[in-house]
Length: 372
Ligand code: 5AD
Ligand code: FES
Image (cartoon, rainbow, N blue to C red):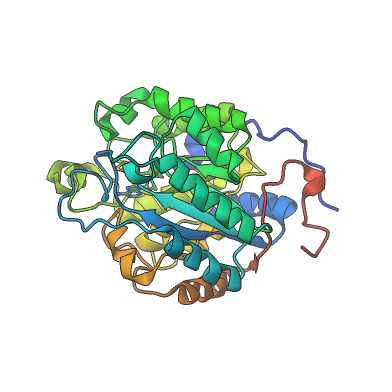
């Protein structure tokens, strides 16, 4: 019988310990083992599958790090229409997916303000409700950025139940250096709290090794998430995109962490997050797989319990390039799914194809129940 875990969703750890763990003062093996032990206590060896559909690479924002920023004029823009998105869901359903994540830039076409005489909110709500009606045994997750509370409520009413919105940086100074003046941390936080209040399962998160980020910044992120109590936390290494201000700046490149350092720090942070947020759903991200061919397997072993294979149509994948050399741009959905299944097994876990909601109490844990 596993030791009883308190129902409190977050465990205490003092700041000095967090910083020591992140800076690799202790042996990483012991840290990863502890994270894995906790993860197995709550989730067993289950790894949840989320099918990622990149619905649009149009974006009204200009984040300095992001390849699909408005200012990147080299990029061919695309958006998927309803039928194409539904076709992705149909293929995904047959491949065993029970969660569809609709992710995109902040595309005004699907936005919450009037655009070209059309109502973007209504368009997106219609797509969500159609998926919800056709696949009542599936969860619809949205990841389409900052919107009004009313819009979040409408999308919830249409059937969306989860929302991913990385906070990116909880420290105002770092947030400011990563984003242009027209974006604000206050609004980002307002969005996250609105989503929670409406009743979404909410995902926050950040990039590890973002230009100018220190361990103290990561500590601020942790403190913020201890307040927010997100159900999902998405983290991955920051990777350069050559057609962004950060990617072009040689100073930024020279100052930043080396590849191996970013990989190590991401894995340590994943493990610390698993210990602090035992119940959280933590994806082993595509960015982790891009920085190291074995990155996603290492992420799973450090506490991650979600993988998100790409279900987008193969002919648009290259255009959703948030950073250079993003993996999985040439593969079909079935190939991505099979590739990830093999990786999950080789890391010592198994893919489960149920809806995979977040567990909130120890008694919901499946470690000792064997079956899904
Ligand atoms: N490197 C790594 N992650 C990035 N993202 C955006 N640009 C980059 C980059 N250059 C992340 C952001 C965003 C998520 C969808 O992708 O954290 O929230
Ligand atoms: Fe699209 Fe930042 S550039 S959200």
